[in-house]
Image 1 (cartoon, rainbow, N blue to C red):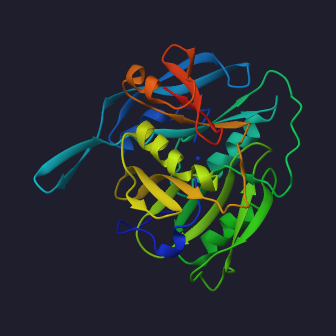
Image 2: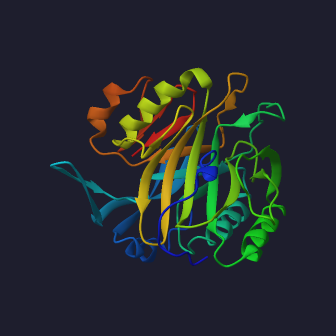
Image 3: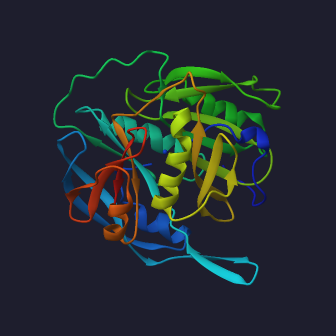
Length: 317
């Protein structure tokens, strides 16, 4: 969709979201030029978090980085904007990576046709999955906020896409606040495969379209996890409530990319997505590692693996 530039989303959109990857990086350079970046795609293989060697492509170096200047009082802070600061890497069973990647790319194209935030790779062999209760809450989600400027049909069309294979319905939640007449006061969540993020779409009544990665946190761990991701991202949330916060990742005239944390009630326990992992690009990783609460292990040159307080595995590069 071709959103108009502007403000942001209404409060009724601030309650769920979040995710990253993309295995075909043939379009990285054109994508990056839109964001004011020139990047070098690099191919390598590294031992995956499940113990198997995984070929990947990733953006290694930003030649030119767009700068946004934030002035606070008499202080001026310059923060480099990197649209690939957060991404999601999904590991599929043999033969399944292509349809999953195509399904993700097709959905993301509604916001921008070349947005390599998700990468799908394959395991060398299928593995037995641990049983997860059907009602379990996956810890990772991606919410796409789409402009309603062009009417209801585009949003309904995407909603229908998420109801067809390889997508499958996961659960439905009640949503506070006003929804549009053509949508019920509920939020449908979908998924592609076991152990991968939840996906949802929501209309934006004004402002820009948004890709939001969300981690659902255990109630008692929320404060610690917030500090953990402040350390990883080297920034504070732009919006912060007792049970929800949003970190700005990237913004231009058309869209925003966000990372958020959602605190679950005491009686809900999020389940880490064992077939997907968040990747973060970090600077000065040698200085960061000693500050992390859990062990951080190198898995290849310049790439480290650790986990947050809820056991969500993350990759640092």
